[in-house]
Length: 102
Image (cartoon, rainbow, N blue to C red; front, side, top):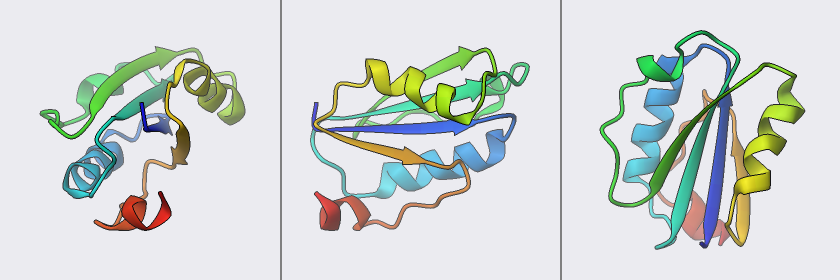
């Protein structure tokens, strides 16, 4: 795995949906995984509108809210990427952002 992206949220499915849509349009490494971590909000991942992408593997996780650091660390422990990225749910990634970084 080349890149692991973690998006931690607490009940912001609209923002996460927009974030995932932007990632689907971005230039990403060939082997990319995205973890969408719901930090304790009831059924929040169920409300995300995203049909998937052939560019990256998406994993949706629901965990108990034990704070921002715990939510990110939970996903980072299972991430397999050589490079790790934590995105807030309201971030809209520009098309060349990762191309320029990696």
